[in-house]
Length: 116
Image (cartoon, helix red, strand yellow):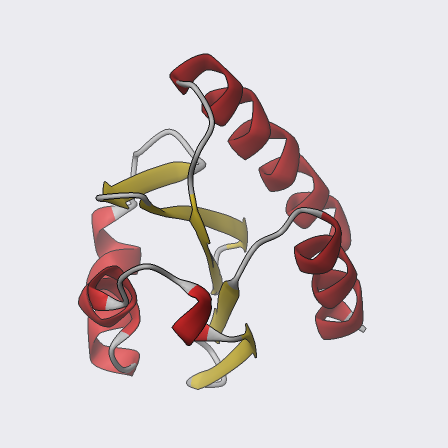
């Protein structure tokens, strides 16, 4: 159910690639195509494997969400709709800073609502 809704959200918002990690189940699922990104290094740095995702999750404790990382034009928006779920959305960012912040907050709310 979540994957179908996420697929729609990704399509509607031109998000190239999405990683969904369930820390309780130790599973990683992806949607989209990483080759649509200008660079894939950010994907590998944050979501290389379950151990790296656990490190990322630990780093998010006490942080205001959503969090974002950017490398060149590639942006990653990290959402945590549940304590055990980490969602990474990767896209080539061409928005101005204020538009990018608004876009990230809007997408994060939609993802949070998917898990309610």
